[in-house]
Amino acid sequence: MPVCEVCGNDYDKAFEVRAEEAAHVFTSFECAIQALAPICAHCGCRIIGHGVEADGRIFCCAHCAEQEGVPALRDRV
Ligand SMILES: [Zn+2]
Ligand SMILES: [Zn+2]
Image (tube, rainbow, N blue to C red):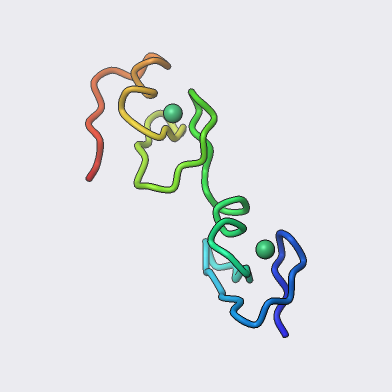
């Protein structure tokens, strides 16, 4: 039985996520988000949408990027 690498749960509906060549096993999307979702460089929230990238940093939205001095980004949708 696969075991969730975040919470250690061995729920039988575990699933695998591949991220940058590594395979991760989770039992819920919540755990997957916890382990894999990037964090907004401005507000610190988990980015589970597309997010925006600038200067090697990642933000949850164009507004946050602007607050960190990144000029006029557009949300990628
Ligand atoms: Zn879990
Ligand atoms: Zn943000």
